[in-house]
Amino acid sequence: MKELLLYVAKQLVDHPEAVTVTEREDAGTLVLELRVSPEDMGKVIGRQGRIAKEIRTVIKTVAQRDGKRVTVDIVD
Image (cartoon, rainbow, N blue to C red):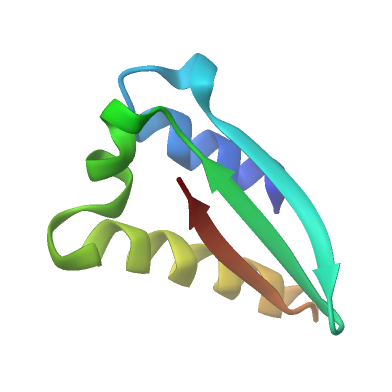
């Protein structure tokens, strides 16, 4: 999941070297924290959060196929 999120985020931003993803476990759910450059935050979130919503949908769909629970947090 982490590699997929990294790949998707790096394709969207102008500064791919600033993209990081950290993993943590929270009540049986894997939480992926996505951090990007402040200049790229709007590109990852999108208008009215549409891109962020789609990123979360893709990651959750892949995780469900593996029988896992994953959430994506976009962190400042």
